[in-house]
Amino acid sequence: MKSSALPDLDRQAACSREFGADPRMVFLGGGNTSVKTATTLYIKPSGIPLATIQAKDFTALDRAELRKLFAAEMPADVWAREAKVKELMAAAVRPAGAGRPSVEAPLHEVIPFTYVYHLHPTLVNGLTCAKGGEAACRKLFPDALWIESLNPGYTLSVEVSKRLTALKSVPQLLVLQNHGIFAGADTLEEIQALYRRVMNTLEAAYAAAGVPVELPAAEPDTATVRAVAPVLRSVLGTDAARALIAAAGPLDAAAGPLTPDHIVYAKSYALILEDGQDPAAAVAAFRTKHGYLPKVVSVPGKAFFTSDATLKGARDTGVAARDAALVQQLTRAFGGPLLLTDAAREFIENWEVESYRKKMAASGAAAVRLANKVCVITGAAQGFGLGIARGMAAEGAVIVIADLNLDGGRKVAAELEAQFGTGRALAVGVDIAAEASVEAMINTVTRQCGGLDVLVANAGVLRAGSVKTLAKADWDLVTNINYTGYFLCVKHAAQIMAAQNAAGGPWTDIVQINSKSGLQGSNKNSAYAGSKFGTIGLTQSFAMELVEDRIKVNSICPGNYYDGPLWSDPERGLFVQYLRTGKVPGAKTIADVRAFYEAKSPIRRGCLPEDVTRAILYVIEQQYETGQAIPVTGGQVMLS
Image (tube, rainbow, N blue to C red; front, side, top):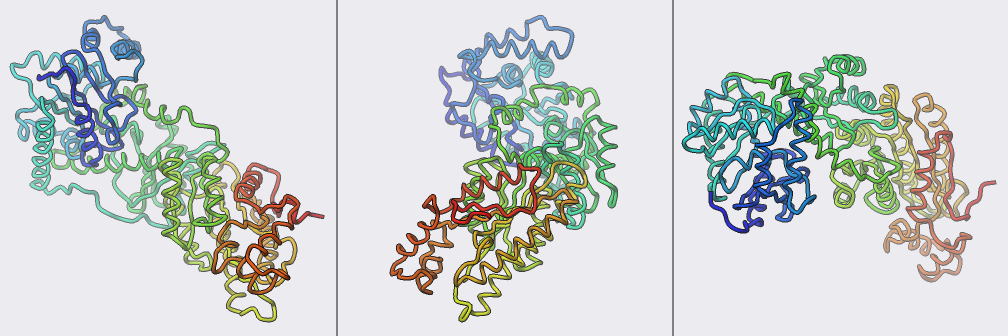
């Protein structure tokens, strides 16, 4: 081993990121890397993804202190022993308390190379998780050391230490049954060359065996998604919050646990749901048998569902479950799948360190009012809808930007995810005046999230003009979008909400963004005011009908949002329209029109998106309110 006084951690981090960002080599930020000097081991700590690690992130451990672990007297009880190991590793951290060392640190220490990389490429695990894996390993990699399945952490490191001590020459490759591959070398170039050789050799082996190295591509069956996903949201969630469900095309779920990582993210077993079988009953039976709720549900030939408390978690579960399915497929080249033993499975299921990353992610989360509620907001790529989306995202919602302007919606979703985190926003294109488009939008939301908790029917248009001259095309446009579009969104959203609610969980909400023009007439604005008056009637009618499905329906009637494009667009905004149509007597400029309208409110300002968001939060949280039209007008319109 070549050791320098101070390693180049920037190069080590860059090489680690290169491997970590390659889905062929790791998934979900897994894997581990380290570099040694004569006195110090620098290792990736728990909770830091390999794909994003920086030089400053590596945890430094005193090697002499870490070595004391191998001489220490250990308790006979496995969990007491794990606690002791954790204590000894913490004592080796330099400076004291600077991060939590990886549980693999002792194993990295006993491998006598400057650089040690532990990755778990899917192609490698097709070998390590196969019944004939050991024999194939000896043939394909005669210079490698095969390590049979052992509990990770202390037990594995002690056994590897004994094996390496007994060998005349130390192999650079250690292949771990059911758990990936270690490579050790004194240069990063050697590390990269070792993994290239491993991958090239395995690709050739799978090709020779006629085993595909990718899963078959397929779309999920829409009818199955609509029938199963909303029910799973409720039965896999809690009384207070539904689960998030991600649906994908059908595939053969792994028959059982193949690697520790698969257990951590996707549990040991999947629920196999027969087509037409009651999902709620099947989940209950699964829980009785296994003692936990499934995170993976497969409907063979139809769809594949993964769940978690968050959308990111549901997607991560899907990544792990698909990796397990591919590993199972690859094992056909080497005699078929070799599952972890019950003892190994139970160790991982109860091992505190394997859940540490998730605990880290969950800890310190601020209390929010819409935590992980799926909130679909129509017309949210701009204007009031955009402001509402930002406000609801800040309260923890998963935001679906449903807008005709899909490119704009994607931009907004990306901005929200950058601010609030991965899995917190997505965009779906929709023309709310076209029923097929609305149905497709709801189907997409159901496929990507499992369903929805809140529909904010915000999309709308306005065409001002005298009743004596208004074109019928403008009348039809306003009516089709504002009135019929609201009906279509409620029609299709309510079907999914009703299915969710019938299986349990909290009430769901439909909130229509109306207008003060829905509470009183609007001069030379009859198409708009008529559509808004009409939708309050729809709200009241929907509320009376949908209460039996535990769906509340309310309207919010904002005052004028002067800074949004509806009013301020220089070509089509209301200030321009009202100036042109002479709606404001004596007004000569846009500024005159704005001043006229601002003076109508006792508070003397326009309504803002945050004002409306507060009202939305109120009707969601208020369990004893439905069928209402709530003014948010700064006193411009007062109920009598």
